[in-house]
Image (cartoon, rainbow, N blue to C red):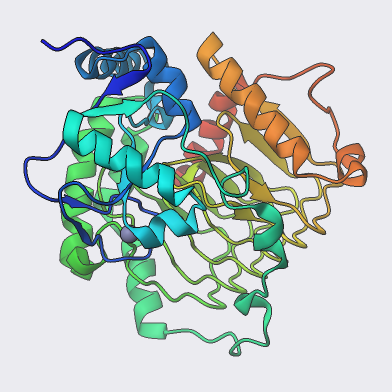
Amino acid sequence: MQEVKASFFECDVPTGDGRCSDKACPCPEVRIPRGGGYLYIEPELVEFRREYPRLADANRAMKERIDRDFASKGVSSYITRFRVVPLLMCEQGARLRKLDLDVASADAKHWWATGLAPLRPTPLLSGRPQSQDSLSEAPSPSLAPGPEPSLNQEHYQRVLRVVLQSEPFRQTFVAAKGHVAAALSAAQNCSAFWKKEFNTQDGYGKGAGFVLVGAMLDNAFFADAPYSGSKLFNGADLRSAKLNRSIWLNMEIEHANFTRANLHEALMLHIWCNGAKFRESDLSGCEFYFVGAEDQTPIDFTNADLTNTTIHLREPLPAIFHGANMSGCRIKLDYNNDFQMKSSKKALDLLLNSLTQEQRSALVGVPGSAVASIGSTDEQSLWARIRKWFSH
Ligand SMILES: [Zn+2]
């Protein structure tokens, strides 16, 4: 077996050509010829692979981490999802992430030839992934005088029927209360059910193209199963939708648009939400627990109302809070071990750095002095609220 030098880590190389594997990239997973493309090495990946430079060791360590979490924490282990190798992407994806193209391309070339990637993050042109300033100053098409809230009624009725009335779905998420095995096997059924109903093969991984602009969905329950592959709400258009007191569980809503939506007292638990837009949304009294995937496009809370909102943090997720009302907003860190503690503190730093002084001082129970951990007790109360939904 070849020696892995300390300054590189080992990754597998496809036998044929590659494909753009960056979910944030709008390209149709274009083919990348051998030797080409751009390699994105995330800082978190470097931290992890420093400990496990050999691929087999990294895979084993990750599997042990996931098994341990499954055994000890049940459903909350869904948030353990972690890449052990860098992302290969096309030029469009590399430009969107503002990678230093020369370095990323040289890294890719070296990786194709040797199966080794350098043990340091890919340098970014702006110093940070997706410079928040440049993003927030860009004119937002969603704030232009858009179409009148309108609704594709037929589509909406089908969504409602499937989400709210389908037995496989209800069973899955009742089962998911703490039993991962049950939830995962049921998730298989759900996935098949969704595909039958919506024929989402074309939307696989990209969302089903739901247009629910202005939909009346107060108190609705939305759920999906991690790894089911349905990802139906990725990219969904929910502008001006009424979603007060709605419950969202284990969903991917990446790049979904909630501009001007009402989410008063909604609960969003274990939500993959990179790139989701909540511009001018009412998130007052809302409780959310967002998690990140590889795609680190910021969540956009521009001019949103986060009065008395509770934000649970475990992973650093870039977000834009320009003009957001943070009055009475509460931040809670969620961790069960040192690794998660480090990560959630980093998440907190990132969040506080995205706020103005005025916004920071509007927070209550500001972590840094006494930081609350939601631990298992609070998670219980979140689940209690979900059980209550099913019991009435
Ligand atoms: Zn691409």
